[in-house]
Figure 1: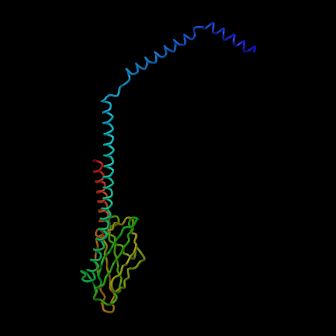
Figure 2 (figure 1 turned 90 degrees about the horizontal axis):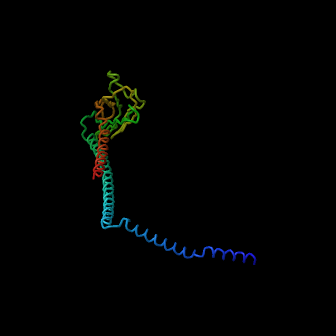
Length: 263
């Protein structure tokens, strides 16, 4: 009770001391309200208003963004179509080249069998192929021999290859026997394929290959020798043709990509 009366006396003393505080508080609230209204009015006067021009500007930017998006999508679609078309074109060129090579080989084979231009006792040289390896001056050699259709007996003999070129500017000849242990002995009735791998000296510059095929005398044929010289550029022509076609394909692809980019 003592504490209660003590606090009551203090409150009464404060009320007597600040008797006009309620009026002051009311006046302060009115002043704050007026200041708030004035500040809001000033903000409305000076704040940027959304005019017709600002709305049209936003619309223009939105339309431009949509146009750019559509243009980008169109270019991406055109690029994808160009890439797919070039890929199909490359596949078509590769298939046509392979088909052409097969037909050329078949035609040459039948020509050599039926009516060879050069033959000895029925032996004809169908083809001599020289394929470069992964190492410099390493080659895969393939010799294809055929026999005339009218011959009914096996032809036997040996083919000799002579690689002619320059070593330090001097004429040099290297036989197949010196380059590999593989012998090109043949014995066949219709055709035979002979393969060998050779490694030419590092300083050897190959110019041409001389082929001599010697037929031994046997039943139905006499001894004979068939000779032919091949220029190295002719032997490697097929490899170069394939490289040129592939290079042309890549150029077509690059040109199409550049045309799409410029659009």
